[in-house]
Image (cartoon, rainbow, N blue to C red; front, top):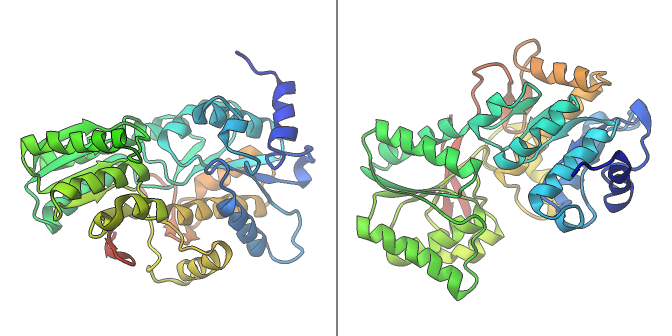
Length: 384
């Protein structure tokens, strides 16, 4: 069903007032910020960082607009439908010159046509699908794609850990399928035996007996093929934590390597328990990295949020900083912002980010690190 502009205006002004109040014209430029629904902690921090980098009294103030009022349920029939509605609202707001996010590959691919029609540049922090490279020149991917990350995981399993067999489990979406394909292709080239390549239910919890039985059944199926030297997880935090607990219940010393979609946070530790320790997690950034920008970010983030930043937090903040830099340069249309971002690393110097130099030039490298979970955090093992 086609949604009228009047209806969209109602949602913009009422349901999520922070997305766009009254349009205030080009004197009030804004960055659309599409992070997790109902999670305004990172949005608040990003606004503080954008204000701080602009300097006291700098005008115009660049606003960061997202969704602070309620979760996706207040904005759509499902998370995906809500993401589409949010893209429509941001596109219809003339103040919004650039969008940061969404973070997931499926979400970005779903809304890419909406932003393309609006001529909206989109800086994509953490989505990894190779399909993004063919979804429009208005998309600017900051993370290494799933093929590169898959090769990184397989190389680590082979060269660093000496694995000769591997099992791969993935969620059945663009992120999981793409990363699993990258891992399998690289593992095959290296001569690793593939014992399993199996999809896992998206958002399958293990908080009840039925959920735990689901993961136990997956482990039992793997056991029939034999214990692999390594298990690679192309999942997100909840599924990976549940599966890690089930796998380690059978094989306490099993090597588990998870892709970037798994965050080392309270949820992961609460679900996985002690089984989390010793697992390997791919990251785009790590709090222990040297460099003034990185360490200043860690200090400021902890002071504001009370927690250590996750690797995705750093990339989202850098994406917003890039968007703000484009606007501060004098860009006042979406076309001008798009041209500025496209030139980063080619027509203009690479952007000095928290995660290191950022370039959107063809073939530019994106950072990948391997980390190992410890009882009190994680250790950085391998990087570019």
